[in-house]
Image (cartoon, rainbow, N blue to C red; front, side, top):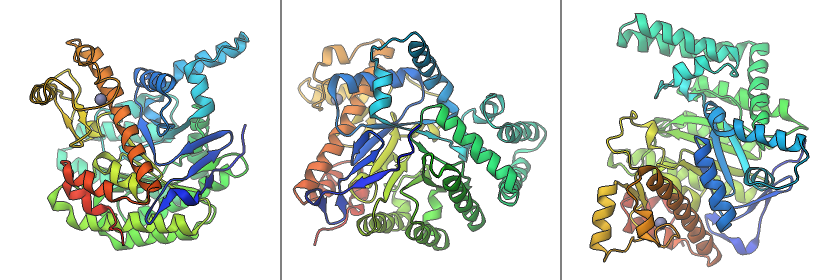
Length: 441
Ligand SMILES: [Zn+2]
């Protein structure tokens, strides 16, 4: 197994004020930034990504992320086929194995679901036999209490239980080591390149201490074997809490051994008018990350569940940005989809359109889809009534759209101007995010 570390290669002609494009190297793999890392939740989505990659060789889609909970339905059959092929000595390259040689794969432990009982995550955690027993036990206990308690009473109980669970991990050395090791092993089994530690959702300074300790221990345990990232999993209101944000920034500055730092802000939408304070704090975070990266060697940053912030964060501060195919929306709503047709990402307005809205846009646009990607170029086959096929097309279009956005940023940086980023946001439905882009002197 490779013991290589993540290297950041800087280029003088790929830097402009608060924006830059670097190469991230790990082992034989090189990823050019800004890079869009799509979150994949099943093997069909992975097949789509692999087919776009093998047919169109995009430059800025060289990574993807799978939540640990989604690994069985996303990666298991592919990994099994891989080992069978090598058993029979088959030498033919197939898309997944060539992707493993080229792309960077992340497995996100996503333990925020111990706190947010979104979708059906509790029963899922309790029933996935491969997960560490301590996590399954936690979920089982929550399910049991949920049945017998009133809603408000359950919430109170669950908050206390959550805190106790993590305090226990903090205080008990062997429990903590076992949890980190178990998660590392699962990530390695799923062919990850860079380990992501099992940290809590940070809702208080105490939980931040626990996250920092787990990050540090994870790096120690991975030393000499693999790269281990630092991971900060936050709620959007943490942006307003100086004691949390300052401590994280300080930690990044001092943690010389950390090469990749990952952030996830749950349910963040800074385009909303009510989020001005958080937006200013996020802007200062972006600027600080970009300064830190400029002044230190081998520091890179990644944003998970970027949602509306995906584009501006790729422009300043983050090297890798990620979102799911539907802009991380499934986490915000229950899965009561009114239409079987997925939403189409409008590359100009940077929001998602229902099929009806898209039809209206096309008819107002002289029967042309306002997009230059290979999928939208042939509306007759794209706009099929078969929703399975339509949804595949919409997802492929999404990948092409994000690739185009990353390329736009890359070109802007090379021309030493990121003004285009602010202009683009200004023209879109994400106007409020235009001031995340630093003004050029
Ligand atoms: Zn398109």
